[in-house]
Image (cartoon, rainbow, N blue to C red; front, side, top):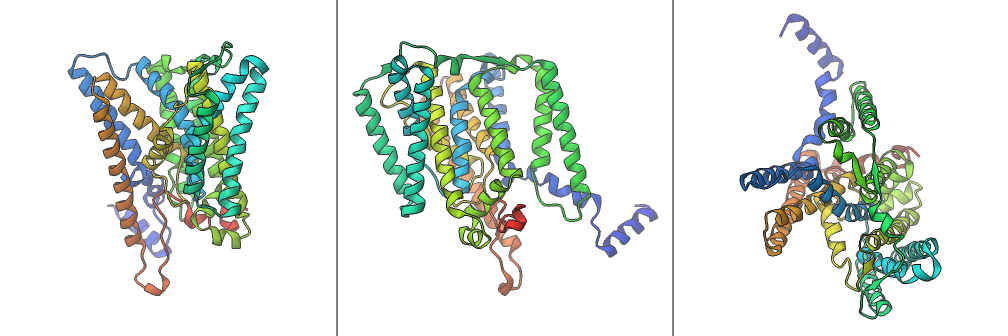
Amino acid sequence: MSEFDKSSADRARISGTPRLSDRIRPALAGLRPQRAGVVYALILLVAVLVITTAAKGQPAYLSSVNVSNILSQAAPDAILAVFMTVVLISGNFDLSIASVAALAAALALKTIDSIGTVPAVILALAVGAAVGTINAVLVQKVGVNAFIVTLGSMTAIRGVVLIALGGESVTAQSRSLVALDSTIFRVPVPVALLIGVLLLVLALLRLRQITDTTSPPVDGYFLALIAAAVISLVVPIAAPAMLTQPLPVWLMLWVTVGVSAALRFLVPGRNLYAVGSNAEAARLSGIKVDRYKMVPFVLTGLASAGVGLLYAGRFNSVDPNGLTGTELTVIAAAILGGTSLFGGAGYVGKSVLGTVVLFTLSNGFNVLNLGSNYQYVVQGAVLIAASAVYTIAARSRRRADTPTDAGSAQPSAMPGDKRAETLSPAASGS
């Protein structure tokens, strides 16, 4: 190190001003395994499948057709995972999503021929919102445990579907719902490249903001922008066919970006983290806790009905057992993404990646002609391993953050949550 560098470092140390590397370090904290574990899991899984399929002489695993197939299959569950994450952040969870989706699909298909497409769609969405409202009232106003309420509504609604369908599948003559699943949209290459450039500019602006801040917070926003920019710039050049996707895939992307932006940049989103982290502290800060506990249930019911319509459009038919088990897949995806089951922590983008991991596993087993029994074993092992990683990381972080003075000890947050910056309206920007 030169004398100039030494003197600069000494001045920075004496003045208390952090060096540039210390300011950039929080922007790279999102690369830690406890924060980006689901990303590493997806990369590792894809690498194993690529090598295995190549060794067996099978077609390239990352072909545009196969990747599009995975995204198309994962899109409905990923949309549900987004809203499940919102419910989990609020400190609750919802087991009724699959039953609500099946009920919406059954209602739409049974009524579309008689009342028309638009009224049938509105009816299905209204029923989903109504179920969400009932769940919210029972949990927040009556005070019944969310597990009991949503487990009961899951069972009761599934019974309603069985009664409505008479135990048989229903198929509509009208094929207007099929357009929801079969409509193809293509993003022009110049538009995709322009989006990539804009994302790159936003990432550089975020990096400048971090380096200009004396004590920058640990944040994965910069890395997320970089990743999105790279994808937007590479895909149009390397695999332009990937820019052509069915409507559910684009809905998944729009919902993920929209909800992520709302949670990060809007005051209600920050307040939601505060409510899920410590409802009493949020109430004392002037946040309307009941509203933030109830609205996620309504939104999840509405989203579940929308996914039911996508399901009905994919097959133009539904049977009484349709979508059974989807709620467990969605919760597993949220857990893989690092969402806390105790509220106050979670990122919808990571939950979507968790969904993609699960469907990549399923797709890989099909490509390799392995039985479904092995698939369930591996999926369960992956879920347990992910939970263990996040739990151990949280425990290590709590130990590291515990002050030596026991009288001043404060509870630490889970990896990736915003408890420390969202417990008061001032911190949340309100």
